[in-house]
Length: 459
Image 1 (cartoon, rainbow, N blue to C red):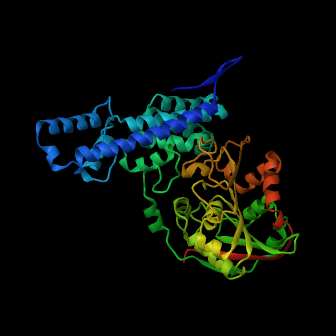
Image 2 (image 1 turned 90 degrees about the horizontal axis):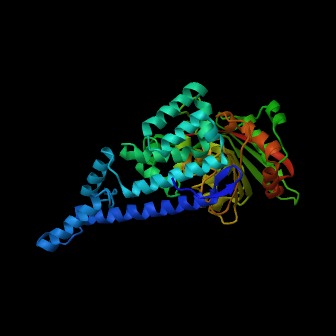
Image 3 (image 1 turned 180 degrees about the horizontal axis):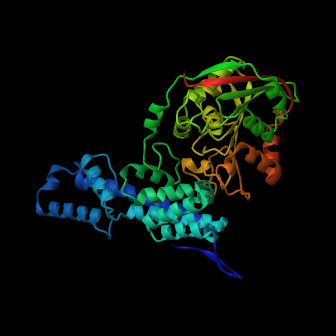
């Protein structure tokens, strides 16, 4: 693997900035070669050649040259996937028989450089013998050995620690695996990750389409007001700080309850803080939109039963045109960004801030250019990388985003993903991050004048 470096007293240290530049260049080159493979495939195997090109010695020689460039290991290697049946059939044969492809080789080289760069900023990836074994197998393109090494971590240290240790490179590892296995369905997701795009069409493990998840996670969304327990009200934080909101989310829990606080700000204006909890892990599908299906669906699609239920809840109480801040953890953070990206929701309310904590949201873009978006990430939390971009990615976060990332000594998932742990991180480990978010939320740091709870349902 190519590296750049600077001399130090202990040898040559890889230059992360140089590696990131190399990653981006390899991703761009892989994308360009892939497009070239599609074009040549359409010419050679599709119907784009004129009929006269199929007769005559020179024409046949030209066709042979195209086929040679397409299939020669010293050329493009093998056709890229295309729209025409013959091209797609040739690409499928190549995937199933593990044929070499220049485009895939370039993409894999870029992913390995990204994994190497992550190991520089997270040396524990190489100092831990089990994760080092995974990374060495990836660097040598030994897929089965990498899988055995991962299973070894799960067996010796538990799945929770395995995910946490590999979290900085987890998305890149999934993309590498998808491009080097014989499953043709997960290649599209791998290409999105390898070229710096965010996942929109499918997930990178099995390649199940986002359309399938959308069919499984259906419903118009429903919200019913809930009479709050006085004991719960006493436990809620009313400071309007990001740490207070996260603690409120942890207090409300993942049982399908939405918390909205009405605040009279320092300027006397009434605003609303919408606090969105994450996913319940006790069932794949529940009556509440806070389930596993809802989480997978929300990563790729902006409109979900969760967003529709929240909109119905707010319309029943919050006046149109009000200023709202959306604060969410995990699936709640995805939903906060999905609402901020919805032009219809932004026409109904003025979304001044959207704060996602431990959420995979890098494919989301606020509809209102004045919305301030924050993404807060513990780098050993694997969840934020599930849409394809890790916290140590060579690609910058989207416009309008302010991203804060950090590490702590909790290398165990899901502990490092818990709302309570994020509250602890922001209060004690990265107080500068919480201070910045709190400064942005200053208009909401007033007196809480009313609190509403809503039970959310798919239907």
